[in-house]
Length: 444
Image 1 (cartoon, rainbow, N blue to C red):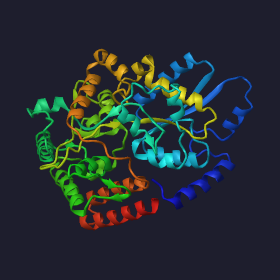
Image 2: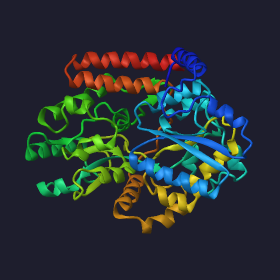
Image 3: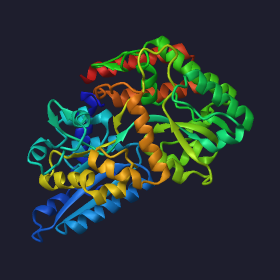
Image 4: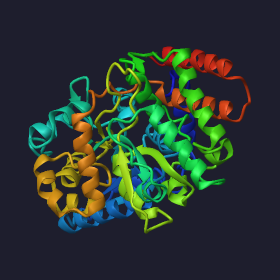
């Protein structure tokens, strides 16, 4: 994520902000809110919880919080939610200032970094005492939430990357819906055909050439991970193939133009498929439900299929992933209550019924078995997709190394430079590789 110098700088800045009672964000209380807690004689416990996501996620999560508070009247939970953009930068600042929320939605990509910096609560004792029940959780998901043999994160849902597509558009144009066996060439041909049939202003797909974890699947298909320990494995030739594919799609309308892509954010409401200006997008399985809910064309039906295969691939790039995690803050004053809420969110039947599959298919096997027959069509599609991936995938790679956040930002910047024609592709790739290697080396 951040190298040592930047971490120290953030720490110093956060101390200065702390001293002047500046929280670094309007939704984060000042340090005095925690200090007042020590002198509270009411017996009430207040926890803070942070997460990122769509409005749908915010609404569902706040419902679960309200249910927990009703069942535990001595505990209140203050929500602090936002979109994905800037979430981990803000959390880094809060951790450096010893003012992070008690309950933290965590991502697989950043788990190692925060755990090894001592920012996360060791949940192992609570799992061992059964205060945090994990016996019905998949062992691979417990492993995914563990760093250096300590449990730091509980999986909120099982997830997989895929291509969201507008099935109604495919049917209108008489184009066969994507099949599990499709390739990148199939994807490119279909995207170009859709653009040609629909005309100007409509694209085959959103351009995700700057999305690192989608490029990661492309690299996994060569038989290796995107990272090997603390080094980047992608070669200049592989990067050239990736960017050339998307460049060709931009030229024929198969992918969004540089200008449209630059104006698109991670908020699903802004995605071209949601606005009715594209037929495909790359996303996570748990996002299908929200894509359907925010779609401009509510009479259109969306589907999801695995990411395209590589021609002559050495392994399937698709993988199952913990959708998001819940972690506790290492310096929380109420670790037992933090563990209690995490247990509630993933194991309570009422809570899991509220959340559904918005964050992914539930990690608790007994909950999952009871839920599936009762789900609406859109959520059943997510369960079915996960079944397909479980049979057509390879094992997930280890968590991203420290320094990933900067590499991720650089990768997106490189894609934008190429899309806008600001420099020739080989030079941009060479600069990206050199910068990524330097960043990763200094972060170890």
